[in-house]
Structure formats: C-alpha cells, structure tokens
Image (cartoon, rainbow, N blue to C red; front, side):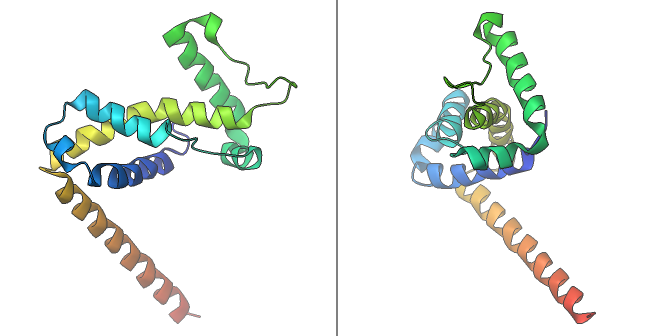
Length: 155
C-alpha cells in the first residue's frame, strides 16, 4: 500500500536531519541495522505520528478500511491470526489514532531501510547528504516562486 508515502518519506528525512546531525561519530562507525533501528525508533516510535481523533480521521480520508486491512494482513503474516486487532476502544469506538500510527510504523520500516540504502549508496557523510537535500529544497522553492510569478503576470 502506497498511501501518503511521499509524506512519510519527508518525515523520515526531517527526523534524520535532526536526529543524526548531533551524532556524526555514530554515523561514521555505524552498522546498518543499528542506524535503521535508531532512525525508525525516532521517526515512528518515540512519539505518535498523529495525535487526535479528528486529525487521524482527516489523515485517513476514505482509505481507513484499506489501511486496516493492510495492517491486519501484516500482523497476520508476521505474528499470526490471534494477534489481529479490531481497532475498537473499550467503548466500541473506532480507534483512528491507532490505525494511523500502526500504518506509519509498519510502512516506516521499509521506507527507513530504503532511505538508509540511498544515503549509504550516494553520500560519503551525513553533511554531504544534508547539503544535497538543502540544495534540492532551494531548487524546488525557486521553481514554485517562478511558477507563481508566471501565473500572476498573466492576470
């Protein structure tokens, strides 16, 4: 399932910028599995991705049932049928926050691994990666400014 993948990738990048910037020594001597564990923990487990029922409902949009099915299949495949959740709280209400946070945690595993592989393949150090991402952001911003100017000049 690829729901909100770009948003999750951007979240991972932001977490990496803040988490690893002060840990340059750790990155120089890392083991890939440890780096994965640290980043995934920081991005999707230290805090909830979404807090609040309203925000969670908005985030899920019309994909809530698909996401629940995705999570339940993941749990069944990895932990067995007896571990599948219904995502209902004690009052029988749908626990939207848990759905969002379980989905982001699960999808985050693959996305963090992909992120680390890309980083490892393309950059010698974290500063080079960070500089590249900042350059990309500036380039994207300049493109948006150019498009906005072009749009308003035609009015």
